[in-house]
Image (cartoon, rainbow, N blue to C red):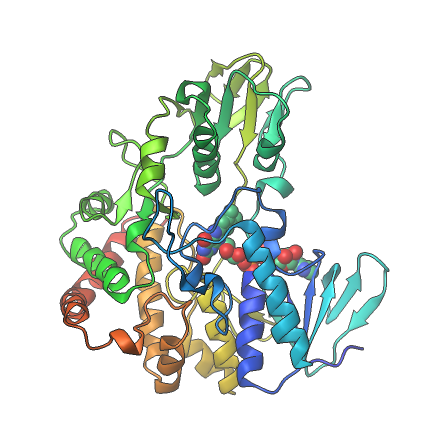
Length: 458
Ligand SMILES: Cc1cc2nc3c(=O)[nH]c(=O)nc-3n(C[C@H](O)[C@H](O)[C@H](O)COP(=O)(O)OP(=O)(O)OC[C@H]3O[C@@H](n4cnc5c(N)ncnc54)[C@H](O)[C@@H]3O)c2cc1C
């Protein structure tokens, strides 16, 4: 029997952020459990050249800034906030575990352990069983855990003599093929293309199988500076107010410098909206061979087969699997439920902030109904309509938790809250103008976004 008030299942970004905020504000004992060998979640198995797609300052736990708030000093993103690499993220979480959690004497970490339900977990190494007492609350910190290519087989058939690799293995190639076939439409596929181009692969040697075209956020406007970030929100609301349709909304956001698309002849339908930098966009646009035939059915040597037809690829082509589902789209559930606290984003996007906020609210309030009223969950987006829905729900969530003075004060003090206004910037004229613009467009913009999202229930 493990003596704990909370059993947090999952030591990825959400489990770590929840635990960090909880022990900062309540005198409780936490058992943190993960089936992986350490903390950090999916980053432990991510491809070696991955980085956060957005500023380090927006990621991690509330108590400790990831990346020290540094700006990039060299390279094509000089002037933008730094973005941590896989090893920096993993090192950060290791240090959070050792220096903050274990050091506090109130957190115990059980690595390599599977939660099997019924307040019980079992070591995958020793086979030992553990249980937590009846009073212990279960925290589901894996409800929306992403599926990644390293752990998900390709969602298509692969002939014995075809060369298909997960994106992780790109960095381990021993010999260059004459062609790379990158499969996927999301952040991982764009990362793979940009990485290949940056290593000197000719654009003509890349074939990009892109079932859907993605809308992506312009990284330059998703920065930890309230004039920039809240300015982007004001632009979004202003664009929404005038939009005739979802497609029109995204085109207006493109004009406003908020959204980016790779091919200006195609109106994208996918809107998971990771951020992208201008230099990456430029690089991606050099790839001329983009195959849009829906999902792959099978890869043979020299051929990729779709439901309707096939395309020829080089005989020695390497097909790069970037087609795992990534973000999960499970039904929204109240965060505080009778069985578990189920961590989900609250403000639109920003899962670390949502989990930390849930930890703070759990530590400072008793009534679950009240906690759920203050912190309604918001979904991850996949389509344009879902993005509009997320924006509305996230904004309503922010108004709800922001109406409580102590939560507002806590949220304005943590860097992982993208909308915070640091006290030293509060009185500036530029910020005043931004806030005026936001104030003028927020309500009509949200009302229009709600209407637009209802036009497509998908
Ligand atoms: C390549 C990539 C880049 C991304 N970049 C960003 C970014 O820049 N910014 C951003 O905000 N988001 C980003 N995301 C989104 C991502 O969803 C979040 O970053 C976040 O890490 C997800 O954390 P999580 O705790 O939900 O999931 P995970 O990190 O997957 O952690 C969940 C953990 O739960 C454990 N677990 C599951 N079931 C059990 C069980 N039964 N017993 C024991 N343990 C269990 C798993 O082993 C896992 O370690 C990115 C996602 C990907 C895939």
